[in-house]
Length: 406
Ligand SMILES: [Zn+2]
Image 1 (cartoon, rainbow, N blue to C red):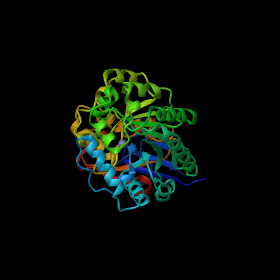
Image 2 (cartoon, rainbow, N blue to C red):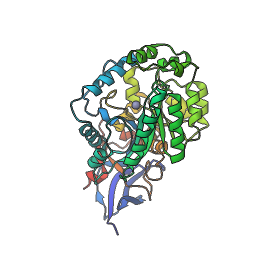
Image 3 (cartoon, helix red, strand yellow):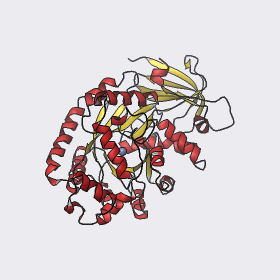
Image 4 (cartoon, rainbow, N blue to C red):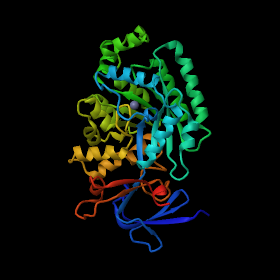
């Protein structure tokens, strides 16, 4: 039988029920056994801290984890994409080293789960090697698929098959698929990805309604993307012959177990109504990345009001100074005092777990779930709610309980 550990904290914030004060958390092996609303004398006293569910970063690109600052310029968007391509071709660190660096960063930021986008050179082995036994991170690895050329679709599907095979060897990695975006994926490749996801019960993610230029391209085959794709030599007349909308993609994803709409910055009223009726689809809002690009205000509050599922991602260091979901939550708390801090916390925990289809094990502090718990040091005051104290400027992220308390 595994050893039982008990920790006393000023607050335990389970997320699926109200916070408990002066509470004790009981863990056995890798699972939560119980939460008590009193100080068990056998418990290790962690002091003036809150225990919260390990954070869920539903969308990240670890391949850019070696960047100290985001890629410039953020606008026009296709210019930023040129910067991304340049950054890939001129990187000095190996992709393995960069992935490992990213893994270390997210763990120290109290992250339990990431929805990672796996691109060229991605290595399940490198990711698993860096993943510690102390605070094992759960990785949902979305294999990115990318081509507008019909001829290249079979090769992309082979890449996906290899990825599914490679991930099988690692308990901490679950495979998933991500046809990149409407401007970079042939509609038949998208359909094939949806079919594989349905068959194998994989989460599927797509960058959708990210820019107004993307919507223009889908509608009329014109605009900055037309020029950009032409310049790259990948433009295909037939792909953009007939108009499409984000709703066409949402409909295709409606029968998936889990579908992730990355960004959704420019979703229309019709899209929003459709999403409200499909709880298997989650919009992944990346707050600081959204701000970096200077988009029109994101509809996340509107989405929440209409009962659309919303979770958070950091995106990569290509558009964000770091990979901390904690800082995303704080960013929302500071800029949206009208939203209850308990709601903000859900976005970075249970909502992300549901988006990725792993809510049985992650997202709340509930007996039976994985003991992936983050520790936040709190200010001393007692007047505000525990959730509000979490996001106070004085509060400090101390990382995962397993590494903090050992
Ligand atoms: Zn992204």
